[in-house]
Image (cartoon, rainbow, N blue to C red; front, side, top):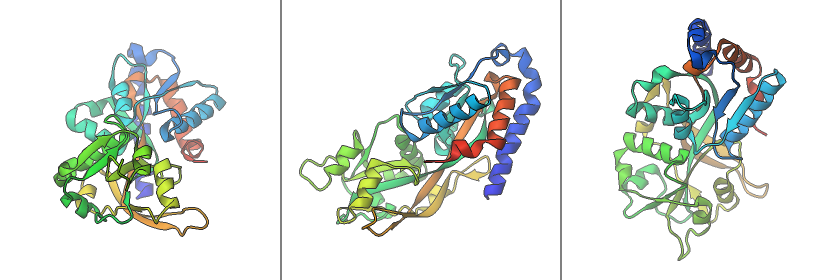
Length: 296
């Protein structure tokens, strides 16, 4: 599967390079401007990956502007907007599919160049909660789910999950500081019953780290509904079922979290790229990608 994905991504980049001959007729694409990537919130996973991309490009003698954003949907909208200079963007595969649901013709404007790794869904609730799986979640009454904001990647993932599992519409979504909400879980001040986080397992998330440190207080819901893995994007599954071995502190045994994960993608708008920029991207993707992909 990984080889097939890699082959498909490289095929897309080769197609972009092969079609670059028309770019000289396009005033936007022919202008030798630097690459501009819309990434994510400063300090977040996508923003950090864009910083690494920036460093790789600088080593190759080129500039990349890293623009902070509200997340995947904002990145895709900037990438497809003729008024925006953004010609590269990071986005979750579910956000891309969600965008294409509402904008079916927009897919002609951009291509998937590479993947930036798996981002996984973590729903954290109280350890003594009767809600233990996503099946329980679908039947829970008056259940409140904390999500960072309506423009966040977490909100995009939840909305995409709603399309696949309509029963989740019974949940009350509460937007706000999920870290504070998790800390207040099981207290009279608690504003939610669970918190949803989407992030790369190898990177740190305050909510996930807190749950791993205190298994006596928190538990991860199992997510196993088969409908979530039924849809595809360009022949590749949007979500993948995974059992993650999540290490906690040394004194706490690792926990296995059964959940779904989605690929993070590097997207390009072919109409905003010159032939020279395409050649640079080819070098980055084919030769230097692990320097961008890698996490600390």
